Structures are given as C-alpha cells and as structure tokens.
Figure 1 (cartoon, rainbow, N blue to C red):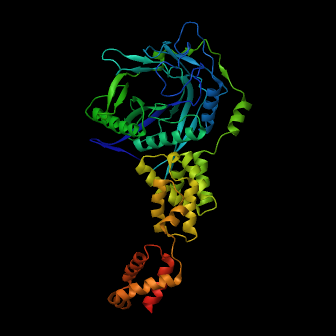
Figure 2 (figure 1 turned 180 degrees about the vertical axis):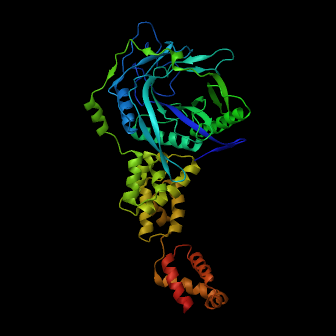
Figure 3 (figure 1 turned 90 degrees about the vertical axis):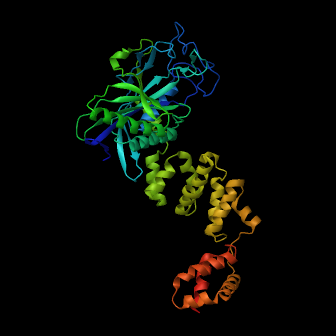
Length: 483
C-alpha cells in the first residue's frame, strides 16, 4: 500500500478520475457540423451549436454507437434505456445556458479497467459510469488586452465522460489508469486520446485520510491535459491537504486548477453539487431506447483489446509480462511487432523492437507510425542475423544506417562489405596472426590466466573488423590456445 508520510504519521490519498473523451465522429452530437481540430474559429458552427431560438437537437446515431462500443470495451453494463438531461449553468462559451448531458440514467453503467503497474503487478479499478454529453465552446483570453474571444467550433462536439470509482491510491496508479484507458479508446477507435489537442481531458478528484478512516473532503482539479500533469497535480494536492489538516485546518470542497508554470493547484470556485445545476430531462429529446440485438452486433465487431492481446503475446510468443505489456500499450506497436515476428524468433523480434527501435524512436521524438525502418525491413535485418550473414554487433551498425536512410539491411550489408566471415581458413589466419603478435599473453593464458581469452577474442574481432563469426572464433581460438 502506498502512503504519504506526514508530521502525524501515514496518510492515504484517495483518487477518482473523470475523463472527458471526445468521440471520433465526423459530426457533432446534436448537429451535422464538422468536428475537425484546428479549423478557423467559428467556422464549424450550426444554428443548433450557437443556440439560435427554435433550433432543435437531433441525436447522432454514430456517436451513440461509439459510446456503446466504449462501454463494451470497458466490460461495462450497457443501459438499453437512458435519458438526456439539461445541466444548467451560465458561462460565455455555453450559448444555450445549459449543457445537454446525462445524469441519473446514463448510457453505460458499471465497468472496470485493469491497471498495469510499473512493478509488473496489476489491479482493477472500477468504472462508475460513462455518459454522453455535448462539449462547450472555448474562451480565448490572450487575443486582446481587455476582451475575451469565444470560439464555438467545439460547442456541441460529442464527449464521453468516463467516471472512475475512488479506487486509486497513488499518482502512479492514476497515471497507469489514464494510460490504459487511452490505450483502450484508441484500440476501439472511439477517441484519439490526444491530450495536447484537448480531445481527452481529466478532472482529478483528490482527498486524504488516515488509513482505515472514512473518505475525507475532496477537491476537484479541472481540465488537466497530460498524464504527467495529472500525476504532479495529485502529488501536490495530497501534500497540500495533509499540511492543512495537520495544522488544525479543514479542507473546503472546491474546484481547483493545476498551474503548469508554478506546479501548484489554485482555487477556482467552491465545488458545485448536482442540485446547483438543476438537472432535469431535456424536453427536446426523447429517452434513448437501444435494441439489445444492435448492441450485440456492435459487440461482435470489437477488436482484440490490450489485456487479451497481452495474454496472447505471453502465451503464443512466450514473451515476458513486461515486454508483452510494452508492446500492446498501443495498437500500432503491437501490429508492428507481429509483422516483424511472423515466421521468426519472437524473442529476438521483441528485443529489437522494444530495445533498438523504441530507443531510436524515443531519441528522435518519433512515434512508431513515423519509423524510418518498416516492420518488413527490420524483419529482413533479423533474417540476416539468423542465417549468420552478419553478427549481432554488425547488425546494430546496420540498424543505425537503416534508421538514418530507410534502406534495406541487405543493401547496406552489400554496399559496406559487412558480410560475416565464416570461412574457417580466413578466421584461422587472423587467429594465428594475433597469437604470433602476443606470445607473452599466450604463455600467461596457458599458465592459468583464463580471463585473457576475452582479450584474444577482442583482438581477432578487431583484426577482422568485427566480421568474423563469433562462435567460430571462440571454437577455433580455444583449440589453438590449448594447443
């Protein structure tokens, strides 16, 4: 169990997350307006989005399907009857004066997410609900010295709000939860998970308590837009609350924001309760009635999800839990690995993908979709190692060139003359030359200094520019040294 040490002993942090995930759909939740990111301000706004009088919302069936698909991917209950409500509040970027959301009767009920933790263990976090709602517009405070501009392009975009149970007990677990949820959404194709563009945002609920006590008063940190910030905000907020309580104060239930420049949470407003929003069923929208057979048809189209893929990689490819977890974290990584491993040694394929390839991509700041080395070409490199055309050491040199140029391994090997020397007589000649040049060390070896064997291997590999087959070098060298 993860505890925070305070002046009065151990404290436990209790964390629940509300993740707002933008639905991948070409149209908004209640209008036909486009949803493309980065368009000119107010260029994707219908009369419905702008809340012109008399304009009525019409539900986007595909957005509903995406929510159901997500619910199924979270192993959650799908509610065949759900209701849209009006959540009333007033803000400049909310033209209707209310948000169409779901409250008492959401489209998706209880589900679960299995967390993959850094120490190799896993644990399950409950999902309370998933409901559909429309997004608000965006206020731009930095375009004019004394005015706020409003961009309604985002107004009406379909969001899935995925609410967790307060089951997490550390910032690491919260980070693992967001990573796993984002991975599932991407596998399903229901949200792109791009936190930088705001298509996935977190509201983080944090409270602290003495181990075993009842839950404490929580504070909500709004609209945190990166996993790193989620974790930092939790660490700061938990310690802030502990210090207040230990100094004899009490925690006010409030909404706070994460200051990304000062790395502190700051108070925004007192926390609203449900009754503050005066929820009531939206009179313009009938209850949503889903057909069980339609839900079952969606279930049949679900892809293999990360947990199932991880189990298969461990079972079929005999990979470690860690390597399998790394490879299935993104569908594109898993697909790349499977293309490389097909018909080859899966452990060798895994080592090259997770080691060399991921290392180079990370250094270059590239995603796997941008890799200059295709899965086919990496497979070709592994084939050259397997058939003894090149050694593992030479392969690393070849890979570096492949990453720089995108060329095939075989072409680089031929062009640079890197083919491995397997000619016994040529290797013997190099060994004889090395032994003749180091008679004193030969004598030392024969007198019992076995550790010098590595010296001789190094000298032979140097003489052959690393091209000699290492296994053959070891075998012939040992015979000659023992002479």
